[in-house]
Amino acid sequence: METLAVVVEEPERVTLRSLTLTPCQADDVVVSIDFSGISMGTEKLMYNGSMPMFPGMGYPLVPGYEAVGTVVDAGENATAMIGKTVFVPGSSKFEGARGLFGGQAKTLITGAARVIPLPAELHEKAVLMSLAATARHCVLGSGGRRNAGSDHRPRCARPPAGAHCAGSWCGADGVGNQ
Image (tube, rainbow, N blue to C red; front, side, top):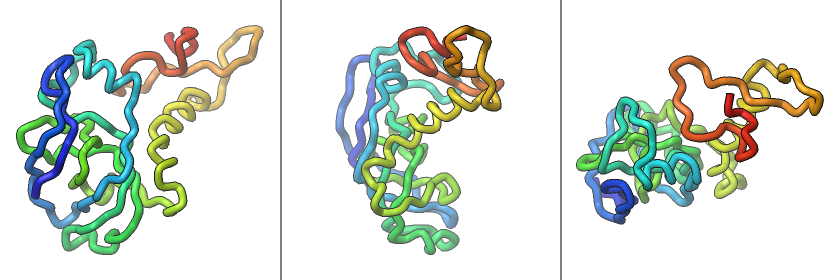
């Protein structure tokens, strides 16, 4: 199966090209993507080559971890998902490019356990789920505690051990850059 994908070939060089997807396995779903968000943090760092190196990082790669689409096919253990609108946090099932995040492609194959079924009316709005999760963890990630300070604004907790975060958690004013 082929898909049309955004591929960051190397820093500052992006192409739109056809990639082969690895075969759908018993627990996988095939999703036709309708919407994919672009992060001005993560994707910008991947594009300009300043993304910190960590396992799986390298070029060429398919960016994106904010995709919404419809399950159009599935492996034998996931057929109940066919027809559902889902949020897809990406895929790594590409040949010829890394799928470190892998959400910016027309068709994706990923494990059914990775997708989140959505009410159909959320559709394009659901690409914001990753950003909403980041904001939620920023505000409540420390168990709802607020850092000391006279302004009582919630501050971001440090990311959990082993988590990877690119850039600031909460904004350009330094809130969260602890």
